[in-house]
Length: 225
Image: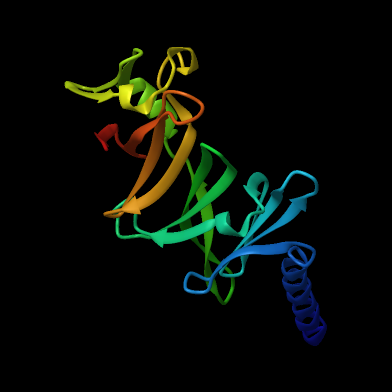
């Protein structure tokens, strides 16, 4: 009876491992970090130039993200970062996706995971658990006031005001937006162990880029360049 029980357990473990491998067999591997032990798999959405239906292999643990999307351009494959961005002595897994690219458009999206221990009878592994991050555009709109005229663009952050002379850009008044727009250029970076969002300000569809506004994901807008 004992031998039969051991055999049943062995078969069960083999089945679980086989399923984990099979979950990514018909997917494309679109990003990988051997240093972290992370691979990202997805399926092509034919005709749209996008990957969707993601699976993340984090050191053998499989996590499904069916609604994520990323462009199929190899230049903009998902970015994998493993750093302590919460400054608590524990590293977070950061994955940056690129949802859209084009002339005057860069739309990226960030996802952050904390790792938690998972114990079995003989082993202990780490599994990623996604945690919420602040929406950078919402932070910016809450803390920034803008003004746009045919001659200048002004941005106020707290008690500081920044003004750009837009006359040298040669943009006709009829081609200006009603206000400074921040939704087309969204990027992220890790700087000094902080996750920072970078949002580009535009005043017209073409030739209207006036600068980058930086915001920590965990704090208010803190600088402008």
